[in-house]
Amino acid sequence: MTVVTRFAPSPTGFLHIGGARTALFNWLFARHHGGVFRLRIEDTDRQRSTKEAIDAIIDGLKWLGLDWDDETVFQFARAPRHAQVALEMLKQGKAYYCYTTPEELEQMREAARAAGKPMRYDGRWRDRDPKDAPPGVKPVIRLKAPTSGETVVHDKVQGEVRVSNEQLDDMILLRSDGNPTYMHSVVVDDHDMGITHVIRGDDHLTNTFRQLQIYQAMGWEPPSFAHIPLIHGPDGAKLSKRHGALGVEAYRDMGYLPEALRNYLLRLGWGHGDDEIISTEQAVQWFDLDGCGRAPSRFDFAKLDNLNGHYLRQADDARLVQEVALRLGVTGDATTEERLTIGMPGLKARAKTLKELADNARFYTLKRPLAPDDKARAQLTAEASKVLKELRGVVAGSQSWSGADLEAAARGFAKAKGIKLGQIAQPLRAALTGATTSPPIFEVMQVLGREETLGRIDDVLAGS
Ligand code: GLU
View 1 (cartoon, helix red, strand yellow):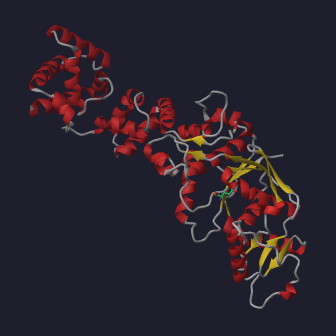
View 2 (view 1 turned 30 degrees about the vertical axis):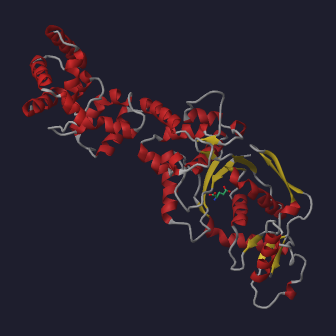
View 3 (view 1 turned 90 degrees about the vertical axis):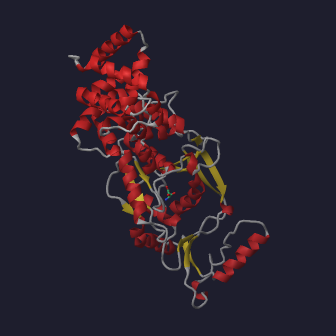
């Protein structure tokens, strides 16, 4: 059997972090089994579905590297097929026309409210002859659901979950305007798309009972179900924006790498021993449903930052240079890109996100004269300037411009003057970077090159 999974987002908002995890798990499961991963846009809610949301979902999946197979399916376009199946069920006696008026439904709702019970349709048209239909009422089509026994989900994560059929009323399949209900569309689509495994958030577990009844009525083989616990905030409460309930594009803008986010999302609800760092290749090899936990996972930015730092250090320098250049708006500036390339090993060792990396790299891209920040300016005292001037004289004639040789020269100079290296390094850093933190300063000199380094020192001396 070929495994076929799907991601079925409703395009009513961005691709949020929970949706991205669902997509990832379905993608991994399909790839692990050499199967097929499909995308279905559930755009049946015409009021709330937007083109922007569809684009955001598609961009988000692409950015995350979750490629899907076959054509994207748009649910709304399949409404005629959904209607056809409902009519087929009608023909087979598995469904019936229901002519209950809105007033009657309101009465049922009132009675349920008064009794403190959830509203259940009472099945009044189940066995009634449509010839009795009141004039002017357009019927809905309802499922003739079983009235006794149980519906059982053998869930791959939650275990066996059952509900008494008495608790489920005859749900609507086709509305009076001929449009299918969401519950019905999902089943028809999953069946027609050959879905073998449905992996989704456990907020859909209760839908599964109803969906199974539709499979049974049609005599279709249902897929396997796996309902994964939702993601909560670090305090255990429902995930809020502050806690990370953001669109995938927000994570991209904050400077997370897609491979880091994949690793992080994988660990939110799936485990393999004590492994924390799991590459995507490894995840494809290992992923199974047994590894999905049953407790809700907690979103933790600190963990995500650590993982991202790890993947940043592993990332190809040329790629990071492009990312940083893009963020700093200096793409295509050859001198700056070359500086960033030479400086990247030192920069990436110290950053957790691309944003931080770009912030730390900014001084390499600035045009002279720099505008030192307040702390840096405080370092540039008259005394410090004197030291800088002398140091300039020492290094200007240096044959080599390697960081190591420059450091040796600076140390020799400090020793001869009887001062500490820090008394040189601090003003030098202020002059060369405009800040008080940076990669090692002799590395900075090497990256900037002789001319730019001396120029930046001269700017400070000229201003003092
Ligand atoms: N469209 C549903 C959602 O976005 C998912 C339906 C499903 O996975 O069955 O929550």
